Length: 365
Image (cartoon, rainbow, N blue to C red):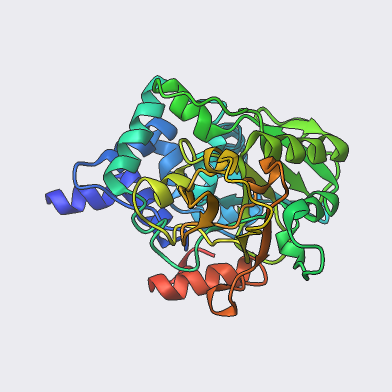
C-alpha cells in the first residue's frame, strides 16, 4: 500500500475530509496539527464512525443498515460519542436521529467539559497556524453581532434577529455554559477579567438540558438577567447568522473569542457580520470623557478635539453607549449598502455557504 493510500485509509484523515465538506469547513495544516487535534477528541473507531455519519442525522435502524454495524454495537458507540460531544442527537416526534456536527460551531464547543492543558494548547496552535482560514474567510459568515437594544434610537425599526431578548423568549428551555473560549485562554495562562459562565443556549424542546454534562439548566428570567449582566460587563452579543430558530447567544470578548480574535488579531474583518447599526455621537452632549474609548474592544472610537469620533471598525454592538454619562452615544442604522441580510434559516445558510465554497453538501446530508 502506498503512502497516499495509507493516508486515505486513516480514520482521522477521513474525518478531516468529512468535516471540511460541511459548509462551515475545517482547515488543514501542513504539519498535521489538525490531525493531532482530532486524535485528542476522538478514538480511532470513533473517528471512523463519525467520518461516515450524516449531517442531518439518522435513526439507529437506518445507520445500522447503511453501515452494516449491529444495532446494539452502534448504540453503545453513539452513546459514548454523545457524552464526549462528538455528535448531536436530534429529537422529533419521539424519534431520535444521530447526526454529525461541524467542527465549529459544534464539536469544539462541546469539549468544554473535557478541556485540559494538552487540548487547550493544541487548539491554540491550530488557530494560530490556520488563522481562521476557510472558517472565517468563507461566505456567508457563521455569526453576526447582536446589538444592545436599549441604545438603539427608539424610532428605528428593529428586525427580530437583532433582538437578543426575543431569541430568549421564543425558547422553551434555557441553559448556560462556561465559555469555552475564556476557558481555553485561561488554561494556556492567558486569562481575561470578564465573566466566564455566560454562554446562553436555548431549545424549542422542554427540559432539553436536564441531563446535560455541559449545560446548566436555567429559567428564562435568569437567561434575560445574564444578557443584561454581560452587557453591563462590556461583552459582545453574537449569534448564528440567520433570521430565525436561533439556538445560542455568545457573550464574549476580543481577547478570547475565536471569531472576534479573527477580526481584531488576524485582520479578518469579515469573519463575522456587523450588526445593522453603528454608533452615532451627539457632539453637543459629548464631553470627551473617554469612558466609551475604554469600553470599545475594537478600537473604533477616539477623542478628537474633545469629542468622540467613530471609525469604520465599529461592529455596532452598542456596549460603549451604556457607559456614556451624557447619553451622547446611540445606535443608528448603517447605510443600506453596508447591511447584509442574513439567510432565513440554517438550511438556506448551509446551501449558500456550500455554494460559495464549492463543496457538495449532498454527499453528507
